[in-house]
Image (cartoon, rainbow, N blue to C red; front, side):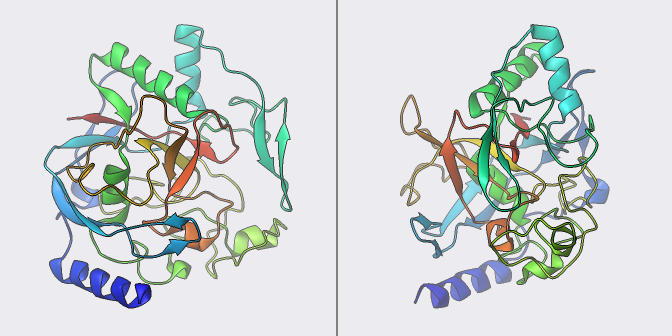
Amino acid sequence: MRFLMSLIIFGIAGILGPVSSTTAADAKVVRDCADCPEMVVIPPGTFQMGRDDGEPERYEGPVRTVTIKHRFAIGKYEVTIGDFQKFVAATGFRTQPGCMQWDGKSAYFDATATWDNPKLPGPLSQQWPVVCVTWFEAKAYTDWLSKLSKRPYRLLSEAEWEYVASEGKGQMYPWGPSPDGGCPTTNMYDQASVRAGLNRPVKAAECDDGQPYVANVGSRAANAFGVHDINGNIWEWIEDCYVMPYPATDGLDGRPVITQPECYRHGNRGGSWTSDAARHRVTFRGRDPGFLRSQSFGIRVARDD
């Protein structure tokens, strides 16, 4: 029944058409200060959020109509190591060492890994997305940008993220019904990963993006809004407390859902270079403690326009 309802709901969304006529070519890109990231302005719109399905204990519904009436700006790229370094140098901000890692067979904690030495495969690049940062450290970075620019920087709401990632197409993936078409825009667990011997205990996408590990931001093509890596490369912390199922009324305007002063779990979205295809569905909802540091969790910023 859930599968049938999903087909009906997504069929309706397809009839409604895209939420915006924006394309990557005509996206408005702004930058508020020299050390601020490039931002893409996202127009208002209405879309169908969620899916009447999901993994056990990870229900992604109920499907609901979300109307975002406010314009907002989103980082054109994920926040890089170089970006975060500017923040640390300017403020003296200190993070604790230690980060969850993946060796191709199991997850483990490396007590010496840090955001500027995340122990990822390949030559360290300042253009890698910053990882091994907690939700609280992501918030500290956005607070610094707010003070620096005198503009209200923050993390994306869960609804804003899905709105941008889905492109309003009403499909399981922005590019179509199958994960195998995702490699032009999405760095995920695929045939390049298999060749590199990552050996994840999940099915790899049949496409090949030529990048088995984390990639420099912007290495994949932008989506229809002009945003790079919104799907894949790293998981992105979002503002909301994780609530399952979606609340009946909260968040229908696209604003974050904050259910208590201190959330036990915060949302994260998008999947990463180690994720199987199912977790790159635009409706998939990650949820983890805000103090978690992982080699596949990072930051994308937003602000009201």
